[in-house]
Image 1: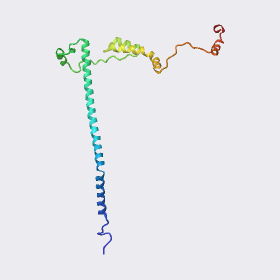
Image 2: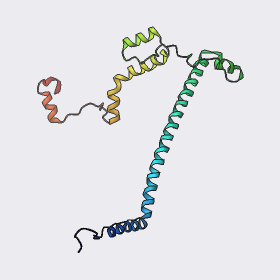
Image 3: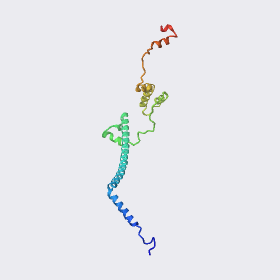
Image 4: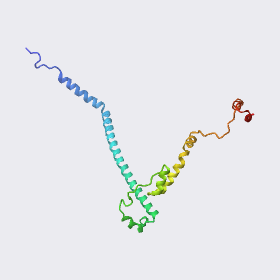
Length: 184
């Protein structure tokens, strides 16, 4: 006699084989979906790496452009002051090579825009670097300030009418009842 539960086959192996075959058939049937998903994941990571690389190159280009502008501004200041380092060509190459990178920075703050008459007087008295340009811009801004409301109204289309008001007969009589000598 057989005992219950021993040595009997309950079909677990069949279910496992069936599930493996089902999984293989799904992979074979939908292989292109798996390939497409893997390709999309690969494209995502490649795009992210490319974006990082382009950001690094852009930052490097910005730094180089800033350095170039700084050198050009320095050269322009030398030219305006008549310095021999501002000469182009072989004559100016020697003095240009002899400079230090931070020679043009004397530590003094540049002139700022003056908003009030007192600040304008201080700007003219102290004469910090670039004070002429700051003075010019300050005077322009101070002269523009009273005109700003009119400029804004003009841009919005609300220009004031410069005409003499015309009254109807009823309005004219109402205004004239107080003093009959001036109206009639």
